[in-house]
Length: 132
Image (cartoon, rainbow, N blue to C red; front, top):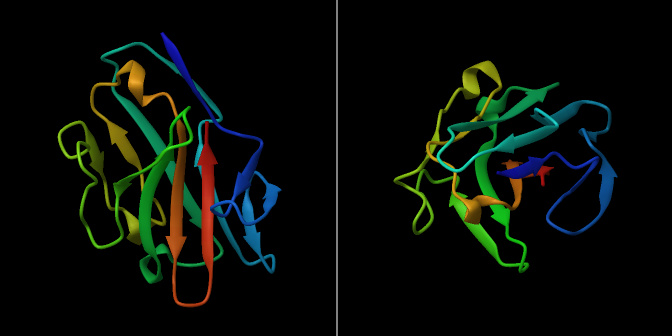
Protein backbone atom coordinates (compact mmCIF):
# COMPACT_ATOMS: atom_id res chain seq x y z
CA UNK A 1 0.00 0.00 0.00
CA UNK A 2 1.08 3.57 -0.61
CA UNK A 3 -0.47 7.00 -0.15
CA UNK A 4 -1.34 9.97 -2.28
CA UNK A 5 -2.00 12.96 -0.03
CA UNK A 6 -3.39 16.33 -0.99
CA UNK A 7 -1.09 19.01 0.32
CA UNK A 8 -2.31 21.79 2.59
CA UNK A 9 -0.69 24.27 0.25
CA UNK A 10 -0.27 24.55 -3.49
CA UNK A 11 2.42 25.83 -5.70
CA UNK A 12 2.09 27.54 -9.03
CA UNK A 13 4.97 25.52 -10.41
CA UNK A 14 7.38 26.69 -7.73
CA UNK A 15 7.00 30.46 -7.98
CA UNK A 16 5.07 31.07 -4.73
CA UNK A 17 2.90 29.34 -2.13
CA UNK A 18 -0.72 30.01 -1.20
CA UNK A 19 -3.46 28.18 0.76
CA UNK A 20 -4.76 24.85 -0.63
CA UNK A 21 -7.39 26.43 -2.85
CA UNK A 22 -5.87 28.68 -5.47
CA UNK A 23 -7.66 31.98 -5.84
CA UNK A 24 -6.81 34.91 -8.06
CA UNK A 25 -8.37 38.23 -7.00
CA UNK A 26 -11.00 36.21 -5.14
CA UNK A 27 -12.55 35.17 -8.44
CA UNK A 28 -11.13 31.88 -9.74
CA UNK A 29 -10.36 28.86 -7.55
CA UNK A 30 -8.77 25.57 -8.59
CA UNK A 31 -9.03 22.62 -6.16
CA UNK A 32 -8.29 18.90 -6.04
CA UNK A 33 -10.18 16.28 -4.01
CA UNK A 34 -10.02 14.14 -1.90
CA UNK A 35 -7.35 15.47 0.47
CA UNK A 36 -5.84 12.04 1.27
CA UNK A 37 -5.83 8.83 -0.64
CA UNK A 38 -4.28 5.47 0.28
CA UNK A 39 -4.18 2.94 -2.52
CA UNK A 40 -2.98 -0.59 -3.10
CA UNK A 41 -1.10 -1.65 -6.17
CA UNK A 42 -3.58 -2.32 -8.95
CA UNK A 43 -6.28 -0.01 -7.53
CA UNK A 44 -8.12 2.39 -9.81
CA UNK A 45 -7.73 5.99 -8.61
CA UNK A 46 -9.46 9.21 -9.63
CA UNK A 47 -7.88 12.58 -8.80
CA UNK A 48 -10.50 15.28 -9.16
CA UNK A 49 -9.72 18.83 -10.22
CA UNK A 50 -12.46 21.45 -10.16
CA UNK A 51 -12.72 25.17 -10.79
CA UNK A 52 -15.07 27.77 -9.35
CA UNK A 53 -15.43 31.40 -10.31
CA UNK A 54 -14.84 30.86 -14.04
CA UNK A 55 -15.63 28.43 -16.81
CA UNK A 56 -12.95 25.79 -17.24
CA UNK A 57 -13.79 25.78 -20.97
CA UNK A 58 -11.71 28.96 -21.29
CA UNK A 59 -8.56 27.33 -19.88
CA UNK A 60 -5.93 24.96 -21.22
CA UNK A 61 -5.83 22.07 -18.75
CA UNK A 62 -2.98 19.68 -18.00
CA UNK A 63 -1.71 17.25 -15.36
CA UNK A 64 1.86 16.59 -14.28
CA UNK A 65 3.66 15.11 -11.29
CA UNK A 66 6.87 15.46 -9.31
CA UNK A 67 8.36 12.18 -8.16
CA UNK A 68 10.24 11.62 -4.88
CA UNK A 69 13.55 12.24 -6.67
CA UNK A 70 12.35 15.69 -7.82
CA UNK A 71 11.89 14.72 -11.46
CA UNK A 72 8.92 16.39 -13.20
CA UNK A 73 6.81 14.32 -15.59
CA UNK A 74 4.03 15.54 -17.86
CA UNK A 75 1.07 13.18 -17.67
CA UNK A 76 -1.30 15.03 -19.99
CA UNK A 77 -0.50 18.18 -21.89
CA UNK A 78 -2.95 20.92 -22.79
CA UNK A 79 -2.68 20.04 -26.48
CA UNK A 80 -4.29 16.64 -25.80
CA UNK A 81 -1.15 14.50 -25.74
CA UNK A 82 -0.02 12.14 -23.01
CA UNK A 83 3.54 12.04 -21.68
CA UNK A 84 5.76 9.06 -22.43
CA UNK A 85 4.54 5.97 -20.59
CA UNK A 86 1.25 7.47 -19.37
CA UNK A 87 -1.27 6.73 -22.14
CA UNK A 88 -1.95 3.10 -21.14
CA UNK A 89 -2.77 3.53 -17.42
CA UNK A 90 -3.69 7.23 -17.12
CA UNK A 91 -6.88 8.68 -18.62
CA UNK A 92 -8.32 12.17 -18.73
CA UNK A 93 -12.05 12.69 -18.56
CA UNK A 94 -12.53 16.08 -20.18
CA UNK A 95 -15.48 17.53 -18.30
CA UNK A 96 -14.49 21.18 -18.67
CA UNK A 97 -18.11 22.07 -19.47
CA UNK A 98 -18.82 21.03 -15.85
CA UNK A 99 -15.65 22.80 -14.58
CA UNK A 100 -14.11 19.43 -13.80
CA UNK A 101 -10.95 17.79 -15.17
CA UNK A 102 -10.38 14.44 -13.41
CA UNK A 103 -7.33 12.24 -13.88
CA UNK A 104 -7.87 8.48 -13.66
CA UNK A 105 -5.08 6.06 -12.84
CA UNK A 106 -6.46 2.74 -14.08
CA UNK A 107 -4.06 0.48 -12.16
CA UNK A 108 -1.86 2.24 -9.60
CA UNK A 109 1.74 1.15 -9.16
CA UNK A 110 4.19 1.87 -6.36
CA UNK A 111 6.07 4.17 -8.75
CA UNK A 112 2.98 6.40 -9.00
CA UNK A 113 3.60 7.80 -5.50
CA UNK A 114 4.29 11.46 -6.31
CA UNK A 115 3.00 15.00 -5.99
CA UNK A 116 0.31 15.48 -8.66
CA UNK A 117 -0.53 18.85 -10.15
CA UNK A 118 -3.63 19.93 -12.01
CA UNK A 119 -2.90 23.05 -14.07
CA UNK A 120 -5.20 25.59 -15.67
CA UNK A 121 -3.75 28.17 -18.04
CA UNK A 122 -5.06 30.94 -20.21
CA UNK A 123 -3.20 33.83 -21.75
CA UNK A 124 -3.22 35.96 -18.58
CA UNK A 125 -3.07 33.65 -15.59
CA UNK A 126 -1.95 30.20 -14.50
CA UNK A 127 -3.38 28.13 -11.65
CA UNK A 128 -1.92 24.97 -10.19
CA UNK A 129 -3.33 22.66 -7.57
CA UNK A 130 -1.13 20.08 -5.95
CA UNK A 131 -1.56 16.56 -4.54
CA UNK A 132 1.17 14.69 -2.67
